[in-house]
Image 1 (cartoon, rainbow, N blue to C red):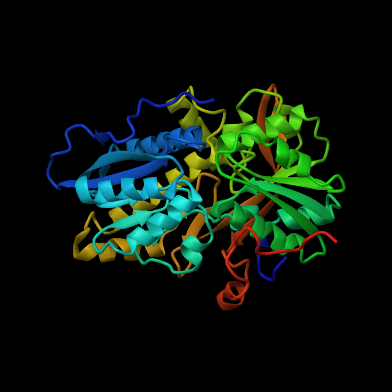
Image 2: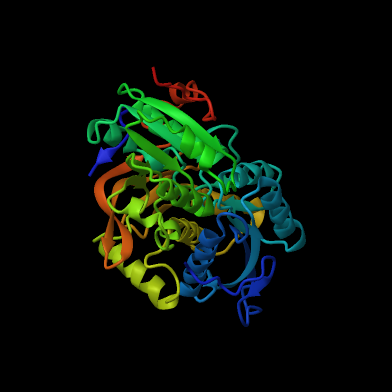
Length: 421
């Protein structure tokens, strides 16, 4: 790995209308109102994850009784479908029509890039990322009004390339993933480790929303030692189901949104592929950390029809909401002067996470956080991830000087490249 990379150490849909405003009761009290908008994917391939994001935001706001620094919170909800143009339109509506002060969102990578660009045009508003994880959102062409308290796709896969090469003895990996910004970042991170050690990768991209993976499965090289799956939501379910039905035998490894409660809670032939599967990601379902156990208990009590454990979507939207609330408390709800004091408070925060750690931001307002290697286990018919390894203080540049890392180029379908020989 790069020097200094780390320090070791189906849900029921909420009753939500896509563009409905949720107003906390009796908000017109002394001290005024802070309007917070949110954008989740309640449509499209990541809709189930978007529903869990709503649960997490509900928990965060209910924990403070929809009140911060003596002001009532008005929560205005918007939905997207993982498409950049739709997310941008919803963000414009929140700012220009609903006049929100702050946006929490979006969920998907291309959406995040679009909202980052939009945030540059704003002078009195702040966007705090929900979960989107495209690397360049905060790595290049950064915006002073955009903050991300979750790792990017490269950070979420830290350690997996080394594990595949050294522990699984894989030398040639076939990658199947979505053809857009977030999977590019995931594959970039995996290949920085795996290729540096001598491994080779065959890439097989599919458009977001693909339902028929027959040609992809047929293209997987027979001599590949493992298949790296970088799909999420319904795309992940479709690929895994069809791979199982095709009798796929090559070992699978995966990124975080493939091995998440959104996928593991679904029933079907794909489940036989998941037990004992190794993946990387920022949360561990079956963690012994007391902070995590308490968070899971609160989640299950509040949403008994939710997942067996909060999904990655829930965790990151919850952290984002907590960051907003903490910064608002620090500035006593003062959003004057184009929110300069609020944004300065956000930049300096150390936010406790449900996993028992803390997340802080680098100079580009990007999270420095923990990541895990996980193994899937079956506990009485329910699948959970368990911890294999933990990596703390994972940076966006894998511990490299920023200029050196930027010289590697932007993650793309062709960068990096270590083709099989």
